[in-house]
Each structure stands twice: as C-alpha cells, then as structure tokens.
Amino acid sequence: MAPQRIVCLTAETTEIAFAVEAGERVVGVSGYAVRPPAARKKPKVAAFQTAHIDRILALKPDLVLGFSDLQADIAAELIRAGVNVLITNQRTLAETYDAIALIGAVVGEPTAGRKLADATRAAIEAVAPPPGAARPRVYFEEWDEPLISGIAWVSELIAMAGGEDIFPEFRWQKRAPDRVVSPEDVILRDPEIIIASWCGKKARLEKIAARPGWDSVAAVTAKELHEIKAPDVLQPGPSLIHGAWEMARIFTTWEAGR
Image (cartoon, rainbow, N blue to C red; front, side, top):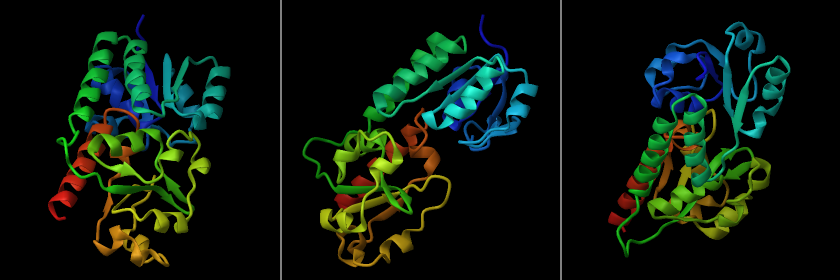
C-alpha cells in the first residue's frame, strides 16, 4: 500500500515526490524546499543536518525521505521511533536517475518515477555542445572556507555541458573535506571559467576575484566568474536540469566571445 503521509527531509526528495504526483500526501518538508511553489506551503520540519524530530513524529508519517549519509543520525532517531525511512546517497548522475526512480516506486508511483528519471536524463544530456566546440577549463567552487571543488555529479554536468573540470581527480570523493583544494592549485591550473555555488549562502564573485594572486587567472582577467544558485546544481534531483542548462549557456557565451 502506498504511503499516505510522507515527510521529505530535503529539497530534492520534495521535488521528486511532487513531480510524481504524490505531493498531496506530503505533510512535511525541508526548509530549503523551493520547488514546486506548492511545497513551500507545507510545514517545515528540517534543515539539512538537523530536523525537528518531535514535529515529524507529530505528523505521523508512513514514510520519511531524505538524502545523504549526513542525515544518518536523523534517520537513526526516526527509525528507533518506529518510522519507515529511506535515505538515498547518490553522488553521480546515474545514481541520481536511479534515486528518482526508486523514490517514485517507494511512494507508490513507479511508472511516474521511471518517466521522471528518464526525462531528467534526457534533458541533461540535451545540453551537449556541437562537435568541435571549444571546451573551457572550469573551476567549480562549492564552498569558500576552505575552497571545495565540485562533487561527482557537478563534474559530470560540466563535462556534459562542454567544459573540462580542472580538478577531475576529486570527482569521486564523496566527502566534502576530501575535495578541498588550495588557492595556489587553482592559480596553477588557470581556469578559463569560474562557477561558484556556495551551499546555503550567496556566492561573492568579487571576493573570489580579489583573492591574492588570482588576478593572473584567465577567468578573472576575462571576467568569466559566474554564480549558479545552489538549488539548481547542488540538489541531486530533477533540478539539475536547470544547472546543466545554465552551464551550457555560460560555456556557449564564453566561446562566442573568444
């Protein structure tokens, strides 16, 4: 029997639940949920690494959905309280498509879940540039203190949209502390485009450009510093479509201006 009362601890699980037509059964969401607009009207019960367990239990959920091992403690507490919990832990685009399909199935909408996964894949793959297009060197910054480069799905999006991640060796590091890079390494690899998406706060492009020694970096010299909003690129679900197309737009504009 499909769960009738669903709590979503993260933005992407909320978006997926609504997209597979289970939104009316969602009774609680993350405070970071922005899509669809209807989700914002639901009770807020979690941030990301914290949650109001008492509020969640008061909603009497049949199922709680979340993302990332960073929510392990929240999940454990809910499980001990007798709640059914599904936490996906996707890091790549392929894992993201699988997670979308899985969530669709778990909420009782397997066909819609598979269709959403396939549509998400198709929309992201459609950003591929034409053959022969120049591929800019790209530095993606997920955080600024310390500098953290992009997770696997971000690195894959860069490649899909026509760029080259300057830190491809960190793509498979699941933990943010394992993706820390030095300012000197960024200077050495001389990115032609810098994209910042600081999780939970607005990226300060002027502060990036003013870092010591970065005035010699190609992206800074050419004023190719860009922000992609975190919900469009750091939430591994259908919203990655927006991030992929924004990257493609940035890369296309860069090539036109060469």
